[in-house]
Length: 178
Image 1 (cartoon, one colour):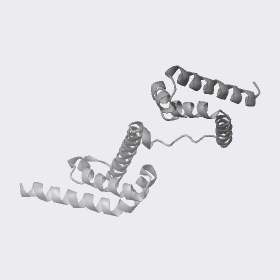
Image 2 (image 1 turned 180 degrees about the horizontal axis):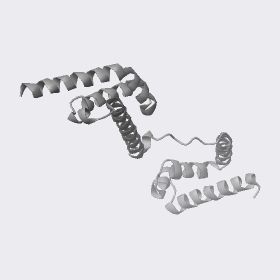
Image 3 (image 1 turned 180 degrees about the vertical axis):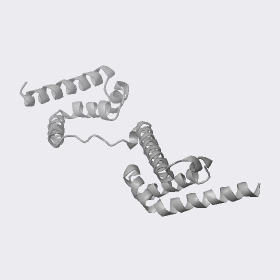
Image 4 (image 1 turned 135 degrees about the vertical axis):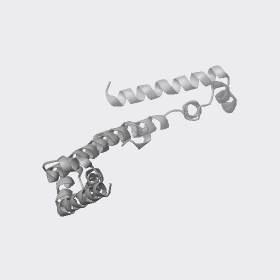
C-alpha cells in the first residue's frame, strides 16, 4: 500500500516538474488560440488540473506532447464557447440596444427641406383652416371638439379640416413640380 502511494507521489512530482518546465511555453502556445494572455493562463491552469492526477500519464510515451494536446483542446473549446456565447448574446439583445441606422447625409437635407416646405404651406392656410387642421392632426381632437372650440357646426369643422388637407397637398405637389 505504501509503495503505491510512493509511486503516485513520484508520478505527481514528475508531472509537476514537466508542467513547470513547460508552463511559459504552454502559455505562449495558448495565447494566439484564445486571444489574450490572461485566458491562456486560465487554460494552462486547467490543463495542469487534467494532466497532474491522471494515471494515464505513466502510460503516455510523450507526456510533454500530451500536455500540449490538452492545452490545445482546452484553448479551442474555450474559443468555441466564447464565440457561441457572443452569437447568443447578440441574437437575444433587446432592440433598443441595437445600433440605430443612421440616415444618409443627403436624406437629412431632404427632410429639413420638406419640413420647411410643409411649414410654409401650413402658414399660407387661412387662419380657421390652419387652426382646425392643427387641432385635428397635431392635437388629436375630434371634429366635435374642433366644432366646440371654433364655435361652428361639426360639418363646418369637417369642411375646414378637409379643405386644409387639400390645400396642403396641392401646395406641396406644386412645389415638387408634379
